Length: 484
Image 1: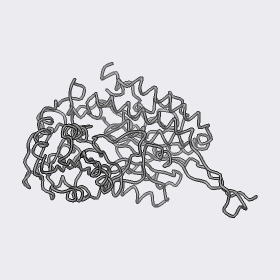
Image 2: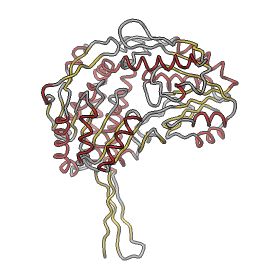
Image 3: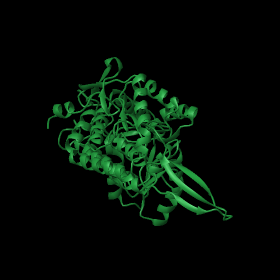
Image 4: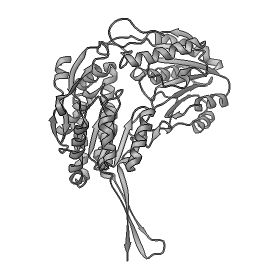
């Protein structure tokens, strides 16, 4: 299994109505390896006309797909789960080549994505309803749940397979057809997933994939068309706001997982070994390019120096390199713009008085690399205190009281996830209840799980993905009044 063969094996055209078709006019764009800067291959660059063709296919397939037996939908998802696991190695290599994350993490993401198909294969056959006697006894209420209809899905580049699985799994289980647009930086994983789902028996037109460098131009007409009935988006809050405005025109149902600004709070009664391990997971998973990444470290004064020293030692020792190299932990960032953003945030903090304990610089040579970095004494007015870093940078601030820590953690427009380390049960419950976040990592640095409801509050999004409620986003409730 060579890098070349893995890339060559993937379809490069648009996947519409069960067929691979070129973009209108034969347009293509290059997919770059962020560790070298070289172009891996070219894929179809869809036009608005292509996007409408994909929506046509989804609309045409909707009625028949909605009428498909839940067990049949379940079995398709189960087969997809098995195929993903069987092909973990080649899919992981493909993801590492287009996104940059180390192979070990890519393997983990393929397994994680597969779990969404297994989880929703089990949920597909458990879509329920209700039967109720009217309060006055004169009739009956029947309640059923039906697929919302054709759905638009937009996924980000940082978890190209997992975010696809998190959206496609419940849509298939619910009986919805789809048009999905993957990020232009990482289209190959989604194209490979489309092939796997077709092999698993997904009927033509249920899943349609459009790759494009003009996401706004292609997707806005689909949103405003009126035939799609739902949009599910994972990406930045700024883009999410624009999409919400567009969805308002046709009152599209929306679910959105947007930006994060996760606080990582360490109290002086915490198990420091566990806190350091959790900090490494919460910060360095996916090279820090995750909405769930710890963005602000607040450490109580009694353990602040020790925490900073130990975290610096761990971060400084992380091997950096191409994600395909054995033992690498710090791969490249996605592109040159990402490197510049991280660099500017670190410069801003240093200019405001923060001390760089390790890292703090780009790396000479090809690829988009930035050193694993720890800063201490980061002032509250530093840009990185309010902006998502999306890179391997850990800024540390000190606090004295519980109230101070909670206030600092909540001082953000975002509320996706918060991390808390303490061995005091009463404090753990108090703080978890007071933190304004959709998810809490209590003495653990990873919260994502297909069986749990993933999502945030405030400007971190709307709705939940995963868990027993994940399928609800793709179902409408219908009430039937029965006269006796």
